Length: 112
Length: 113
Image 1: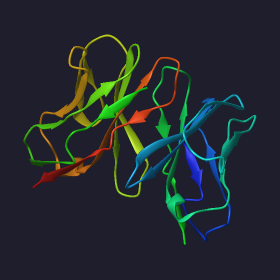
Image 2: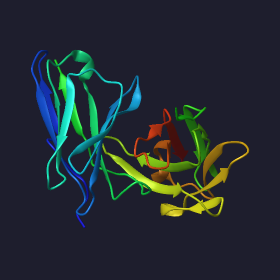
Image 3: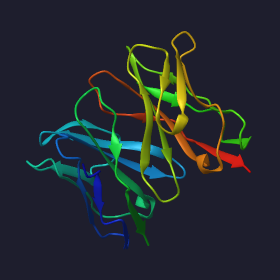
């Protein structure tokens, strides 16, 4: 089986722009979660989607949003980018409620 | 709320010596515990998990972890460290029915040849 695929791997944006990141989960996995990783804050949970519904949400401002499609692929969007949004954004998929999360390689966002 | 503490920033160990990375957790209900490893500019790779059953869990690449409920700990161990084990290690916890993982800050492991 192919692993979790995230695109793009690297991107550079300027303040005020918006960005969309994509995640394709492992085939058959219906849960997709997103995490932000920064040197200062570590790994922080953004949100989780299951069967196109947001099931859980972390403590991030409304500029951070996501969605999941019927094929389980997910996107996250960050609007009005700030310098502090520079981070590695990791997507993870899971079969259900008791399994481990499998992570993609991440999308590294740099905001200038 | 669920949380994880990894008390050491960096763990240095000589190649061939035992490696231990410490983790303590806090969660409501029964814990689901995980260890992940991250290499530079890469995502997280799953090493092992504890859901229920034996307190000693064996995982990938010769790693194992011991669940201790009374001490709320889940320390990662490897009997003989390799230089290639040098990486960032994360402990994580979640509760049943919740895919939201709480991660520790991570431990940088440096294996010295």
